Image (cartoon, rainbow, N blue to C red):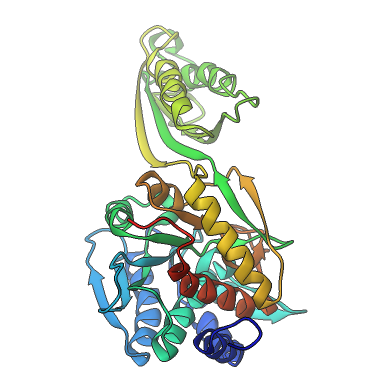
Length: 396
């Protein structure tokens, strides 16, 4: 044992320290590959970038086909002699929020120690980190059981195809590390809000707004009456927020609007608050005050909250100690953002989120990655995985 590290831990740490340039090379290729959530061809192309790396490292690969969204990918490092056969999951998504062609407009670049480009921190850097951690463990061993890199395809739209795969993996897993970016100041996530994304559609009746105004039923007027009522459901004390983020409707300026719609974002802290808030939104959406108007309510997608458990706290303590060995200190904070980690935690699996390299301003043209955090974050994650064998978490 050297400096408190086992020989295998030291070998993994040392090897990762030499891989910074290779990590950036893989990251550049991944960022420059279009992968907007609805672009199946692009998301699958981004998957191929990672699959090629996994193959070069001798890792077992499985592709789970999806007809509409990108395929799911599992890269597995087995440990056939482990007493605990529950896999340790390194999770991350490769889809982004950006429109097709964004990497050509804003290709990967490095300026003043920061990397830029669509999805650079959210969360392509985390996927690269996971891939190199798996490669290091394949090369030197020391992992206490099977380790799986799960690469999903549609997190930015609430994981419509990935969620069943994620939940199935979590039910069988020992622990999950989700590689969403850590935040400036080396902050990872202690908890996340849940989110429900819904749509209200209003139907009215078209009429000429000059000659036949009285014959019309304005869907826009009905929607306009609803929006302040949606927003009044916000209650900051328990952390519940309701935001109408998109609206549309109408036919022409001189036509009484026959249709209108809006999309609504609900965020909540505790699972118990979810049903009450959704019921209130639904009632407003489906009840009309403009005579002749009709409306409907549809849930389009949903994230579950990440609520900290004693097991998750133990996982954070394990990571905090590993981070110290990798040369940095870390703290945890609550965030209103949603992630796939809520799905894994809801299955009762100890989950630690935001262990990816440090970044910020996700979903904007100013999204950035702190380049010099790639290697230390990979080292901390690898050591955390290796030290799960020490019994920090309760056995299954």
